[in-house]
Image (cartoon, rainbow, N blue to C red; front, side, top):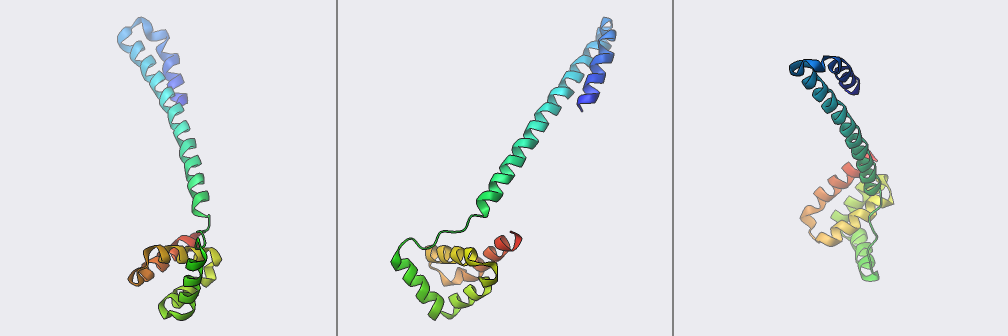
Length: 128
């Protein structure tokens, strides 16, 4: 895009004595150059944001904040069949996935949402 803008300016300058032809060519050339500069900066910004988002997404979920939550999670994972099944389904994805299950399930405290939580975690950790 920059190349064509420069060509338009170079051809427009000698034709500037004919204002109806030369001046629009110069203006369009400048617009093409400026738009290509802006788009390359926008691409760099988008790439930086994508990299930042990927870095944030890969950080593991926090472990339960206090001993009571940790003990509650340990009991649920050991004695509740649904929670134990969810933990077993996420074990191949690593401890970060199980930590995220723990934090999410304890925050929501709704057993009906457990399949959706597991599916979301599998989708998230399956890609990374």
